Length: 482
Image (cartoon, rainbow, N blue to C red):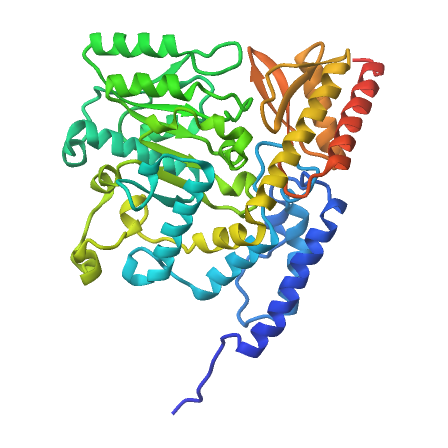
């Protein structure tokens, strides 16, 4: 009989190495400002450092962790740095990381209620609590006609909403027979690109997405929306879906939710609200007005992994009528049949999403809500908005710069007066410095710099330093011959 072998990490080794990893993460967060925010490595540099073969024998964990420091860390763009002002944030926090660790340790695959009741029921309760915290309509509660579920991203949420709208319009016919090209959807020209991708994936066709013009604040123009719906009906098409954005990616523009919602209600369209970034602001009562009109929405999503200190991925998605979503997405093969599902008394969240399998994402979100509490979450949201307003004031007071969009929450879109080329050079020099990281957009055809104040560790000194760097870089480039 062969000697019994085991290659697994023992519990005692796991304890020892686990403490080392926790210390590594704590040291990283404590010292993250020392690293260049945008990774300076070139294409292939990290991959080439990792070797070309799997080791024949297992290696010491200490060596693996050392390589993470020496080979992986140089290729990290530091999203957790207070100097990260690019895109929108992807935040983490101590309680979220520990919640994620606990979920990984449990190793739950929560596709059905029966495969881990706690995975489902914690998610249901957390989404109900968040609906209360955000002031969302009563229909979104699990105790009413709808309910909430955690998706990976807002891209998946809008795809699920679009499929539900498609099937509601066709009476589930398109699931069986495919699309006929007559169903049409609507969003603004500033809406996230994920909707255009979703149109292709859902079989509706990108050509059937109507991108509606915006007003001077980059919000969807409702008169143009109503006119386009009328024109499409006159052409024999079937309008089925409209998406409003609460905080567009380019400029944080806020679409007129109530006006769009009324049009959708009158026309029988599924109305989805994408609040991926800015929905978090509604935690504060003074910003709850952002949700005016959400009572018209058939679905709504926001991302705690952006501005609510819950590490990626975690997108909260609610529907007013869960039967429409489940009817569009549910398939029940024999190998998944069980007594709890048959009873109809439980949620099987596999029916609320595209994949079958799912992680215990709700655990980290539950940790965050309990650790920060309402007071802590409101404090940091208010602080970021205050710092953004301070930055906007500095920009408006400087004759060399101009704001190019309103700054209602925590994103500033601005530019140096002059050419697009100058603004691009400013951005590249700032990013190359390693001190901060900005990205850009185009608004009214002009190159605009975007600076988001939303990283968990960003404080007043970091925003002031960012503005000083921008000002100094612009002065240097103005003096430099082109």
